[in-house]
Length: 483
Image (cartoon, rainbow, N blue to C red; front, side, top):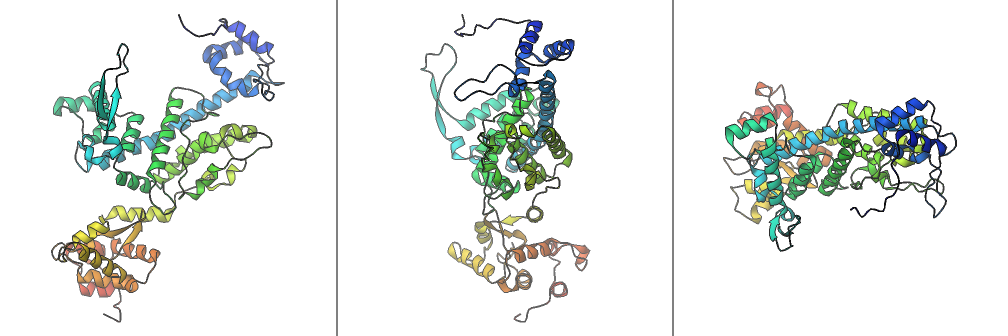
């Protein structure tokens, strides 16, 4: 027998109608009320008429009686809005989830089709063995073993692949056997398995993804913890919506982390008083969800209809129910913030710079030093890189709080920086005297196709092909007086 002390009696639908009418709710058409309760259910609908119950006195429970003139249609309108909100959130979150599937499959896939099975691509916390205890019914607790989170994840993923009914999964099993390659495996992972895989990634890879999705700290470096937090928040919201649960005024367990490099989101950290009432933190309710979705959809260049549907739905609802702002975590001046603007876009300069970085291979400082094979190993190579950079002979740009050197500058045959690269960079960088914007402008010059080049290639491509000549360079960039 159950241990519950619940003793409330079962009520027929007509008895349920009688009860809410006795508590002061205006029902209107009784047949319509009966149909609504049959379609939705008394218990589920009670969550939507809860705001219309008489507020509690300090130290007391909220009254079961309704505020004067409360109508059943008010609760039904709120329920309908919540239905539409859940659908809009699911639609928007799907864009992020699908993009994450690609990113994880693509990034790990560069190391091989089964890189997700290799612990070397994951952080120590994910691969460290942990004590495990059997929790199955009937186990006496003596069943213990050591297993890493990564090993547990691999086992569960294997089970998922084995039972998947997706046609592509069956095709791979039939023609190639198990397991699925990572770029296929991501398509059968739940959102939970995806976020767990993201959490386990090598920290450098997580930082890079966070930086590319503009989840950054004040130095411009990717904030991987915030990115993981956002994905977990969206996973929880997705699950709530997928199970048709109330979302409009709900507290989400995963409180949103706000990275310091996003000024348009800093106001979410404030708690705005409304008279003597407590305002729920914005980072735990749907306003925060809307804010990070808006940011991510803009970064991923997703069709604006996903953002606009959600924004219009919220705007129209709050226009007639401004008192609901606090319940949803909206600040009173929410429409004054940039993140809520109809024309909100990601930082275009940052987007353009990221596009350049993706257009060409980049070396870190260590890789740049390693490329100078004509120089003795160790500090001499690093010193040569620094000497070239400080004197404008070698171009570098700052990204993710680190220096990045375009790989085309290094001659694989000579093991040094070719003379033409040195000449071009010194002209572009004014001998090392330009600022950060000037460095990015120099990279843009290298990567932009030019009609003066053979086959109208970019200078960087001409350098790789060996078709960049001194004569062509002098036509494009005037020589310096010190040459």
